Amino acid sequence: MKWVFIDYENIGSMEKIDLSQYEKVIVFLGAKQPKLDFGTSKYEAPINLTVIQIKDTRPNNLDFHLAYYLGKYDHEAGKDVTFEVVTNDNGFAPLISHLQSNGRSCKHINNFITQDSTQKLLTVLKKSPKEKRPKTLASLKNHIAVCLKLQNNEIAVQGQVNKLVQEKKVILNGESVEYQC
Image 1: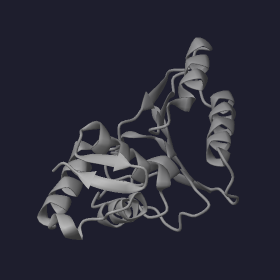
Image 2: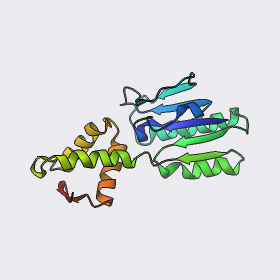
Image 3: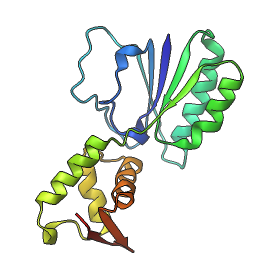
Image 4: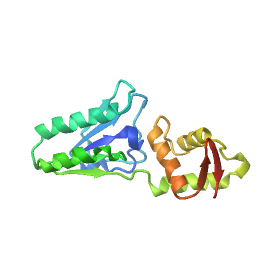
């Protein structure tokens, strides 16, 4: 039996998550996120879904809420329930380790900045003539958000920028962007 805690603000879409494998799905939605994106997934059975919409925009606000509910549900759930925390935020590692040391099976599921999404972004960029590609970091971030449907998800957008830099597809010089692809 598995329950999942999804940091939606951090991953931006549930398209890559098979929700049918969980008995309980708890999604934490940021204050500036108006809707959930399930992608093209279709489910044959009902999903036990709880959405916790965070009301205020403050640093780490969603993370604190997720941590609160991990503790609350750890107290309520039987020890046979495995928790999975879906986030690209490594800040949860100490809490997950603490839950494990207290007898809870708990896993961190990450890497939702997928190779597919990075490849899609690169394909779109390569099709554009270099002179028409975003020239500033801000315009590149906007382009990524639109291309990958990551509006209002600054963390996922920044993750894509980091991946492009890491893979040496772009070079950032202050606020300007140079393309290597």
